[in-house]
Length: 461
Image (tube, rainbow, N blue to C red):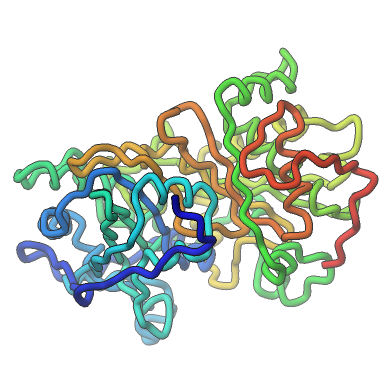
């Protein structure tokens, strides 16, 4: 059994190749929306899959070339508009240059790798080919590496530019690719909708709601209060991975009492937020925020076209003083109420358009200074991907950072894995608070030790 704390190096037999659409595609420019263009999203979504049975690389490349006919912007290049246009917003040059496809081998079995990958490890980055580029915009929007295992299985890693699509859009693309890998047909279940004009700003822009999840560059530069985000980024971070079974989630919901009905996400988001705040030992007077993605594709008043794969979400914002979340008699019930209120605000007619108009100002930024950000991957169908050799035995992110992910649990559609990286000095406290309500423990390090609220240190940030 593999015992090393670090993965062995991948062996590349050949140089990576560019996979281009299998037939000519439109050569034009797709102007990205204000939601796509956010600085907050200028990173790749990196997925890691483990399959017990491999699919031939040539079959994967052939299906990829065919799916890129439908999703031809993924074969283009993201760039900033020319300075003469008056702004530097992003667009996709649909030039058909292709996606990067790398193939490698590693001396591990699927069983060994599943055990190793239960908790993210920095050495997992070896499984994604590193494109040598000066900046984010110089990297092709789609990079793929297939790594063959000695048991006949394979690891599939994808890096998809978040400015091109969101989690739902990436899942839609991956399932279309997998579908064509099992079929010689050119048809896919859902045709992609490319244009972003449906999320254009009004003229002139009209910001009709308060948006506490955003700030401006001027406010960032003049900020005098604690910047938790900067503190976290300066610390050695340890990934914390805790899985909640359906029965444990039900137990968590019951803490809200019979008078408050809530969803799994609402209960788990509130619980995670409170535990995050408690473990950091923040002053009781500090205002903290919870930012979480809300999909608005199917809003009743103005749904997005079917197949829209661009960023079709906005960040809802719940905010409270630390003392409101952690000091008695405040409990899970209060946090759930705040999450529900934030969700209901996003659902109001014209709210999304107000966000789009707000982002027309290029000085607006997501306010990360005192925020926990949660992204939900657990209801996107990512764990159902099948290229013909069966569904994955593991699905998750390639890396972990200070953004919190709610991940699917392979084999348990109602379970949720919570993954977030915390400073080494407080990760044990975080895991204890996350698990103390029911004995939920997975990779929970020092979670068996008790840390009282009164013993928390005040962190200077």
